[in-house]
Image 1: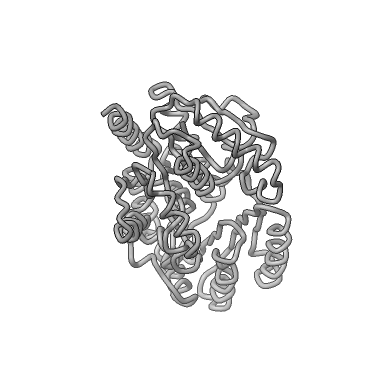
Image 2: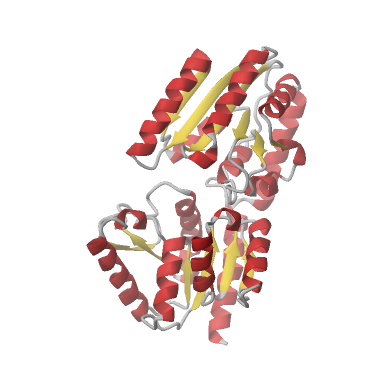
Length: 374
């Protein structure tokens, strides 16, 4: 039983990961997903929807609906015969853990949690809630070795020692692994993609683009795919993009809330993806592997997960001028650009493919079921 904070038909990395697990392991393990809101289409696995809202976050300001949701989750898990309960986000973890501690839910299952965030980003209050909640978790899964070691160090200090596993996120579609056509020296398309929020540091993205244009050494075009969770984010994003168009003019192609299925084409038309998140804020960097799978060069700040994903110190940069210098290098050296793109595709095939992700979850669930049987 996978329990999630967000309906799997909404947009997000958590949702994509759950679909990969459930679609590939449903027959073998009878996987079901317990989620906010009903499933609107046949996804190839069992979805159990609760309430009308599609995100637990939307219930925070609706106490009656929130209470209804909590009661329904507790009632369902009291009756479940699932051998494994696997939470994939914070709210579900906190809810189920506290219910177990209060004995509202009998712990007849192996409890697994995947932390898709990063320990370094959590506030002191959230870390405290995690410590309490993880005391009843049997296995903690991290998406990077970095986050696993951070958690292991923190939990060992309070005497909590769950089993640990590292299961990297998977690229949404393995695609055909097609080689990219050779580019033209002196011309480059630079892409930026991600949610519009403070820690993604979109102003740094614009500053890098501005300095590259001012340098004048290469002919650059820019693409931006900006994701917005709500109307407030959208208003701020559109204001930012207005400023970006004023700086970059016709050299900028920007879109808000690009459908997930169209992002592969975004990356195929981008030579270099630049990730500008602030230090310690990226848990993994799913955008990086999506771009790498399409043969993009990826450059990033030292923001956490991407350093491990890219595994190349030369692609981890800090100051705008460092990014400009590296972009110019790949713009002029098309052979180096192509070679890096091929290396990125190979790394995704080996570590971040759906097959690899499913195989590791199969081992995880087999061990969890055996542990409960013992």
